[in-house]
Length: 272
Image (cartoon, rainbow, N blue to C red):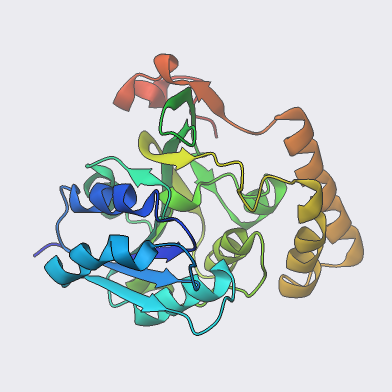
């Protein structure tokens, strides 16, 4: 029997995109999944868009928070409900390719790893491709995760719940996915990257993470208060993050036409 995958999907005012995200889950070759949608009190017609899917698919479950609380709380609520062998993440404006779950589970089983990520394509708000993809490192341990300021895409991350156990997302407004990966790396040796491009990340003008300067206090809180790093180390990792964001060094962004599917492992694009 196929392993059960719990898919964590927080949403807030994504009525224009969530249906496409759900359809990308329904199209998965791996059929044994539960989609846990947690609504952070949307004010648009999200519930109306979801209604036919909730009526038709019992493995799509919807919860609406009592008050607007942020993505960390929404993700934590979905994780509280998760019953799967694996836990995967997909925001309500992003997409998966149909073979995402099947290839990633095969990769994790064959390599006996508990935490993994894949490559993903960047798309514009209207769904057209930007023509570039981001590829994760082959192996990202705790220190490398800090140094590279989270080189994996939230929509591609998956961990084995049987190994990692139940988790909750650290309650910070921004970079809470990064905080969750660091928490996960306290429980396993590394996040192992696949070169395959198995997701599509939608770049939106209203994205909470687009204002980089505004993220500084959240990085400090993550490093110093959540991860309990000293003042000097915390400041150092903030400098590393600012350097990477400013220079793009350490970000493995490649042109889609340069990717050659599975044989990318033999190229310099798939980095250590």
